[in-house]
Image (tube, rainbow, N blue to C red; front, side):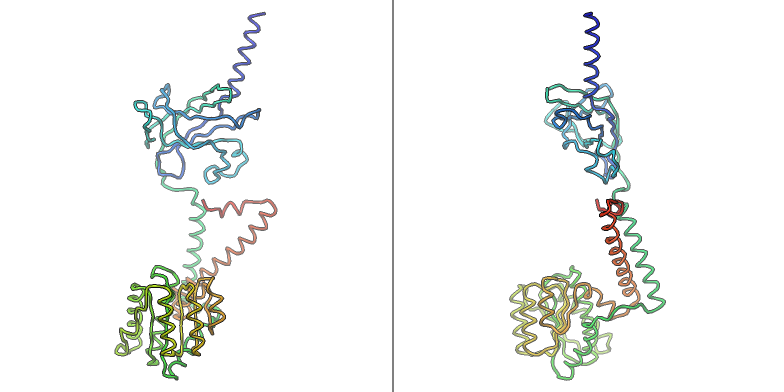
Length: 402
């Protein structure tokens, strides 16, 4: 009888050990990284009282028989918390994972030894119960290596390739025939505004925003300046270009000079027509306001990214009766320009200005291709919203950025 009870106890103890021992343990190179990292996965323990209190330790050895050394890793998480690596399957809610990039130096415990690429490591997962008992898993092996391609970016690559092809096809079509672009009133009014300044014998004032040459809106503003300078050269109208950034001023000087040269009037260009006003925001605004009141330009053109000075400039220009054309992608300043200027280019209309004015096939094709891409994204957003409402997340997952 005693022998029988011992056997039963041993069987029950063995079953308990097996129940608490981490199962389904796997170790492999961490995907989509530059190496030096191993991902360890194992099954979520079967439900029992206190399951959330189980702690795990991952030990690493250079031999299958040990010795094994502790690691310093982030807490174990469900695979569902990292869909970029493990996907969206139901099994990801039943698996745990942790990443290991170093382990304790056996000769100097405070130090850590980094995981090396191309070297085989042996790993165990140890479960620590609240009672103080510990249960190690079976030993598994893995080696880290550098990944050539980050699979989590595949959707970005595919979508980017599709949009690039759309733009290239649009450029090809633009070289064959005229592409339709809706009328932009502010750009159509440029010749009228410059013509009015010519008739009145007054200057045209062009004011950049307050951002540097590396800003998209400033680049777009310089493209508009090229067209304005070309027209003022043809009309023999005085042009004044105010700047608050030395680099933007240097670029503007070259653009205006080239425009006068292309118009066949290089002698009409004056270096003083493109000048530095001030580097500080409100010093710049005060100087321009004074210039408007004294010289009373017939046309004010304000292009670029503006801040609080936008209303000061626009109100002063309106008070002297100048025709004002403004363009900005600063949504906080658009209301001020809309209410005080005759014409306002809003947001991407400023970016489209160079293609709209020049009608150059590459620019037109790029603009048209981007518009087609935006339309496609809007359709996908609407369709994705409807599918997500019905509980179908496939489209949402495809467009998720990791």
